[in-house]
Length: 345
Image 1 (cartoon, rainbow, N blue to C red):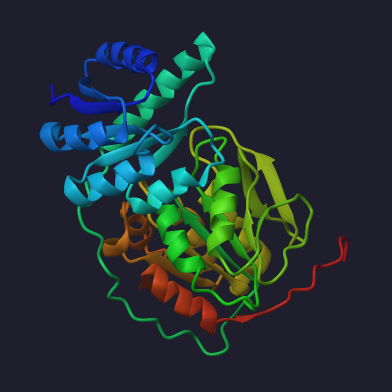
Image 2: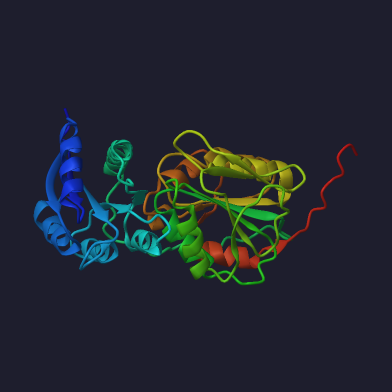
């Protein structure tokens, strides 16, 4: 049997710490090595205990979860899971930008909510324990690839998971207000946090960031996110399609990118950014087979390189770019307005 996952729990509620310690300690593959009541204590214990995973409450008296994340990642890097009682707070996403890996919502207080939270927390801890620990961010070394002459796109899709918010932030703030095509984002996210992601990206991007509405025709120079708990794709007439998601991985990057290949053909373009697993590789291949442009984030610049590496391994793209280099590519691309075909014609 492999060594149990060593976890440091942080919460300003002694009752919550007691409940979570009891729940996690009942699992043979998890060991709670310590508990902390505030950020300062979490920072100190992270140095002495060196756990595999730390859970950090976002809002705590004294040093909050953001401050603790910044200190831990600079002094004793660790896999950090943010636990937020307010899913729409931008503190959660600022903590992700500072190095935290994931964020989940705290229970609202009912016993059944606490039980469901315990299951989600355990699943997240097991997932993050498999993520390679990144102790230093690497600057991108890629140069902007030469684009085929006359490259014109009708829309650009981006899919990401763990580490995606940081990559998206690095990309979006470098884009011009006059981008001549729409951007579509499929960022894997815990239910309840889409509003916070929308607000955070809106504060960083010169482009308007919107929650997609069904049947709407996307506008150039606009960034679209799917509604909370939904997938986003592009319909056959170029319209936005939103549909309720099921399963554990959503929104689906494969679904988004494959729909763009069908709707836009050679004028489709997409990129797979930081994330764990292989999601996005199939959709990116669909764009490549349609003659569109495809890219993968440079693995060295990823918080988790699994998704870009899968896209490269499966030959869905040969173009490797950092988020900053991808911004240069997007600024160089021309847009094209496709005229929807008339049904029955």
